Length: 447
Image (tube, rainbow, N blue to C red; front, side, top):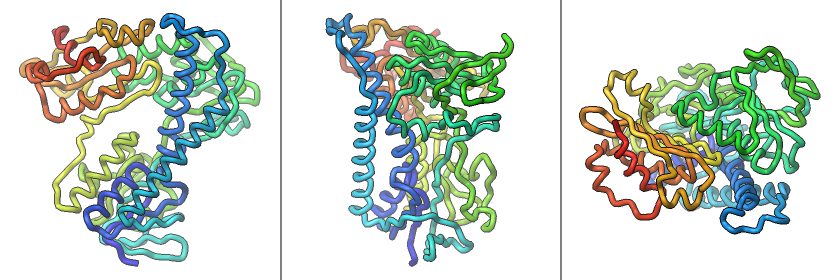
């Protein structure tokens, strides 16, 4: 069958692009080999954040005496939390399916392969399209560690399918995924040790953020071993080396959280001459590949590794096809670590700005000066930092940790997108008392 627009992959890039294209009047096909929603809904963002919320709720209740909450008799039923997670996922999948039906997107279940001439084969059927969007997502990257195929080893997908708690957990990798699972399990009383090869956790973050996050997770009982390289795994333990020598950790469950890799295999990409490698499909800022009419978005491009970035990439592609000139602005893409406390960032760090030749000033204030934050998070550290251009006082970056800063970072993103300066931000009215006021008050500390 002939389509105006065909999408391979039903994740955040794919279903958003399909809906938008169909809404613009394009006859649209969406091919998904597993379940609508992709990794984010079925194996990542949604299930992990649902379980994190369950763990946070338990932790807050257990430590609620400062608020006058009686904490005797509080318990955590992980199987019920697991059941709630599955219900959330089912409801979201139904919602996506409903959207596809509403916008008259043809949804085909099956494994897709690309053929020359902008054609897509699914089983015995071949579909042709004027434009094709490739958004097949990513999978956990598994390092070549001896014994990594042991029974007690899981990746980020496998750990989300478990409905029982381990006696203890060892996490290989102290990035975003590792820290979120460390927070979740430690919050419900499971001993957690994180082995990180770098000198600090979440090394892509502002250094001050990473240090405070590590300190806060240590308060919850997480043990971090930095500069530690895993040598091997056996059925009882993990063997590693660091500056202190060799070490062994007994492990009931081992999570491999060493990043992700783009899904570029077994799609026919070599045969059609697509420009790609193990790091992903190469695209320009519009989502175009080296093959006219073939576009790519999301994790398969190896760029942002964020669900909302994938959705935005899909929107950019469709906007350009529909005649609205649009392009990606990756340096204004917000990111969140959904630990407790949360971390939220957007824009440049001081070091990144200076590397671009910019003269900058920074400001930092503790979250604890904010009334709403202090009332709700009396025992939690946190801060907000801004990076501004020295001459113009134009905002370049916002970096914060504490409370629910994930719900505030969109405001900072809007400020960056509109290139606001300090004096213009001062004119914005922030409701009081809200934690968001910290984004206005922090400019008092800019030096």
